[in-house]
Image (cartoon, rainbow, N blue to C red; front, side, top):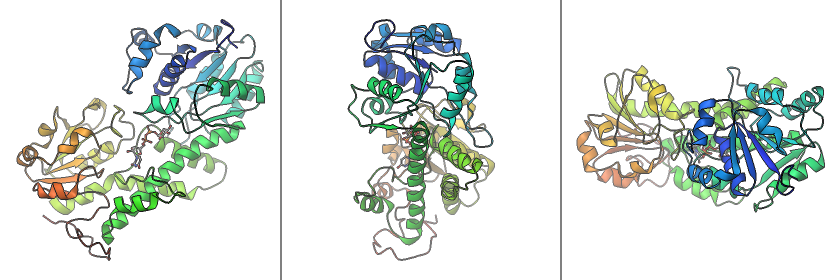
Length: 451
Ligand code: UDX
């Protein structure tokens, strides 16, 4: 119960990053009073003015309409004074060893003052299995044994985060004490989803295992796509046929240029490292990572098959963010691909409707429009499936390019339409011109569309 109103719990959120702000806004929207604490003064100042420092659909509006229930502060004492539940939503980026960097988590724990009543610290940040136990011990050592601890991992995807929060497949609540778990579960009672109650270790593992499994599916379908390319099968048809099996399901079977983002690469590597630190070699995850790295580079091979040496060739990279509807460039395939092309001596002309390209791809030329990016290009590569690229195979684009070659890293376009529009076209795991019509899928030469 709230120390202040005696009705709903008052929630503090530590970390005004993407997870923290989505969590804060959604709880405020559910009627909770929410205090958001961050250590960056400019961020707090911006939030007070209603400015959200990144793009997430619907978030700015949601924060605005719940403004009277929210408070932003730099001050820990203010953040915790009235809080019943304290969500930790700070970043846990990878270190050079592949472990998660927990310094921001420990900074929160170290700053906590003694609190009135039984406040609960809730870990939303993605942390290695065993972190809860360590935090529990650290709290106890500091005489803060009256503060409860619960693991409540987030499963929010960028671009759909608000919907993912409000309509989740499940809510995972791992607790040391039954009553703490019950209180955190009760925060979600307006949300229609199964609550999975576990111990803290298992809750931590559910998060890592879920992301690792989804990443495994992507690397799996990417390898199937690569085999489709040399056998004449069509990965889209294969994924559909596989996905209708209820034991498999249709999700995360889109072949492409590899997964990126702030979660999958980090969490797969963190789980692999966590296993390794405990003496277990997680072979499957090593393969998932390797396949993903190779997948980002396969485009270079396809370009070379058409263009020969890439030195002094002009390549348009279309879409830079790790997926559409976000401005996030973290671990985006475009960074590896663009850097490889620059290393080959190619001129890279890049376009993206959202990304702030300044800190990435030094040496590339950033263009305001798709047409500017393809001007004089020997090839155009679709890296992110932005809607704006659906009409890429147009007359204007064909006339602007030096050679009408499209490499579609996301299978965004219809191969027949693109070829009918006069382009040479490569995609991922769908038949090339040689294979088109040969539905039998016999093994044939992997040489493709030499121009
Ligand atoms: C992911 C998880 O979905 C989310 O539950 C977790 O909390 C954070 O990580 P996010 O990184 O926002 O969310 O993006 P997601 O939509 O899952 O896509 C991740 C990457 O995989 C993207 O690069 C995407 O292009 C790629 N992907 C996804 C594929 O290549 N194929 C697919 O079938 C699905």
